Length: 439
Image (tube, rainbow, N blue to C red; front, side, top):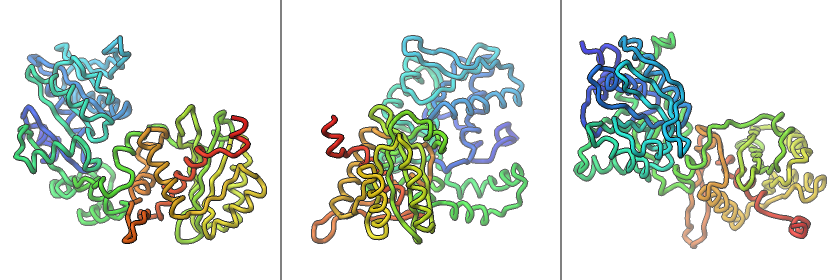
């Protein structure tokens, strides 16, 4: 039994023992590939005769820290002396730093976030973790590949993020065009991981006794829709051509900051804008509150109400409108939302704007929201599955008479989060006659 097969499942061991100069892994989520790859990193730099450092580019600082923690664990398990140097400066001129683990032979593992400049001019083994989530994949790859010229290996690991990514471009080149770059491809959907023992590993760690079929059934049931299941677990990239908001647009404005609470709004110094998509029974009433910091709108609070009486919804909206920082609230005044919008307009004047969802108005605010995504004029919380699926759920169709319409649903809503956010961005974009005069 080799060390790799002792500690790892077959698909993980296959990755670790693959010595190809170019290797790439398309995988499902949470299959332990970063964990396995950290073992490979230690084995590359720790031996006395090791010649090259390892440079790991993760999607963000949190992942970079976690990767180095894995490396520290394997150094202890394999009995290699290693010193955690913490965060070290790697480029003074550009103020770029990395988390660093140094071994007795002087070689190091550098774990850094996704700035392509951090790898520029470096030499060693290069690892691009969750590559499809990086904001500038093409630049990152162009800078990373030359760093392996003197004998290093380039390793790419990722879950898919749509068809229009450099990561998927490479995968398609391997599968459809004869693999001209000569990659060693590892494809690991959840089904393969289950066949090779991941359920038993999870059961042992979590003190469970779940069967393999039950595990797969549970993961599928917990997905919001089929697209999420196929992309996040089955290595099938989502088709951005059918979506109004692409994965690239979404990940381009995602930020690690989480949503705030009511106390934050009370103390907020910047203007707040609100969008409200109204429902009563079947769907969600979504209240989306954003803080405008400079020219950029930051998601701060999202309130979701399902099956709540209109009196409760009205009370919630009145509480928000009472905040002096709230400059405007745009409310869906179509159908059941009409009365709410009229009542709030009477009490708060131009601060509460009722909006009727005609075809032309929906087109206006939908394209307005997409433009803000394209121009990166808003920030949304990273890894918010419900929001992502509502944003991805909207599709643009042309009717037989040539008119444009928007359709789509996610598992738990009628894309209500999309329309609430579109109304919020519209609230920040319009000006009343009074404001126009003051301006």
